[in-house]
Image 1 (cartoon, rainbow, N blue to C red):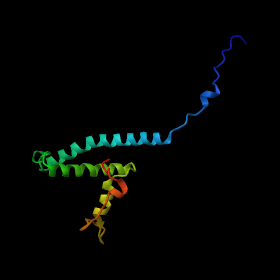
Image 2: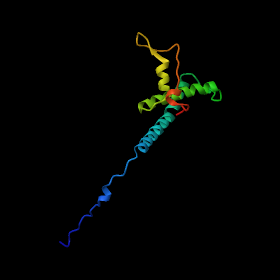
Image 3: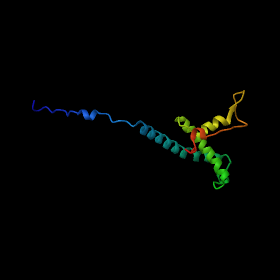
Length: 130
């Protein structure tokens, strides 16, 4: 019996589960999702604008210092962000905008509504920038 090596015994303390902070875990998961979405946008947007440039709407015609051009570019970027947020079940103001901006006609065609009224402050408060 002298030549038998005993396996170490684990103490009961090692089996005690750490308390899981559910809010912290949800926050960390959300941070991971948002990081992934932002990284995806870094890939998607340059390719999208490159394709727009290829079909004749030259990027050199777009002046980022012009507020109107910047607004349209941000509209596209936020629309894509809203789609990615929807994939991850994250709320984004443009999801509500799309729901109110478009309607389905009698032939199941999607059309822009002629008149919309939307208030983001109900759902997002004063800070709707995500």
